[in-house]
Length: 442
Image 1 (cartoon, rainbow, N blue to C red):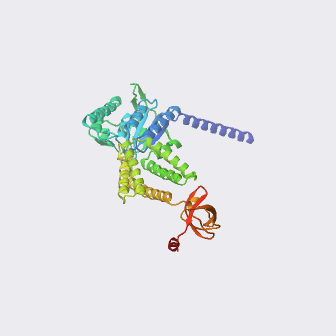
Image 2 (spheres, one colour):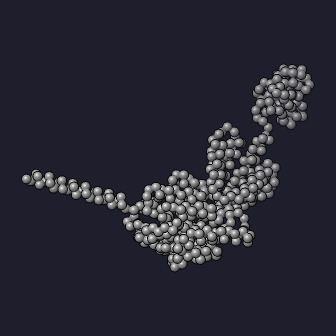
């Protein structure tokens, strides 16, 4: 009886454990999933690619929503339009959350905040200052009005559908007005203020949102499991290359290595590595708005440095070249926000360093080409020697420890001193060494 009772207890315990595991697995399966993407950088093509990938993953894994944690000073308008369009056409609801405290959704970030199904901010954050900035040159009055009207129309096209305040949103574009989290909530530009991510999801639970096609959808985010999407290797590399300072340093380093390969052909490694660095730099810069007038300044600066090294300009050409390089680097990227431009310290440091190294290397190369050859018959010209036999006018001479076939301009006795004046292939042209020349040499 005791054994039977013990077996019954074991079977009961096993059954209860199985039921508990099954219930836990079912609860986990029913637990909603929220994918999270962190955008803590300027808005550019790499950011657009990251958001597009996050939306695809959220649609594929059945996420209840995509949470975008945003902190940006702004960026490129083309990338902003692409990202806002992807959010507006997404099947998965998108929540944009400006966080943590101290973050901002400036300029292009404000467009993304308003494009979200749920716009949220943490206390101590701000958004706005969305007046468009022309990437190339200065806008005249007509062009400024066109760009401004286009940006306003783009913002109105989805702000009104989201049920938010279009007039307050336009103020951020027209007069670069910026809002704190509280001001944005009172102006009906955002939907929620939440100090933490958990509180944000709790605030969104049961919220009814209006999709761009006019349909209503209720968010079910109770106890949601938040899964942070990590950057892919490609995105990490592109994010590194799109930094204008890094791209510029790669370009300069690659150019110097390629020059080293040309100056000492056959080494292979500097040329190969330099080519890779230059290609990486060009690829990174291609993702940014580049001013071609700045590229011309860089070419002109390099030409001036080469002229200084080859012809000499008492430093004037070098200073002009360094000035062209500095100004060209500072204006190379037509940055809509300062964070996307080349740092002044990097531009000045690279210009001075590259200018000095270029002048030094080119001068070495010019001097090497002007220096008399040290090998073969060319090296014998101007050297003194001794006739090993009578030259009448042909014979053999000993020059620099080497025996050469020689032709004398006049008969020379055996053992007489001669001097090489020219050569024809492997035959030297010599003449008797004069007494005064020998005395001078002594």
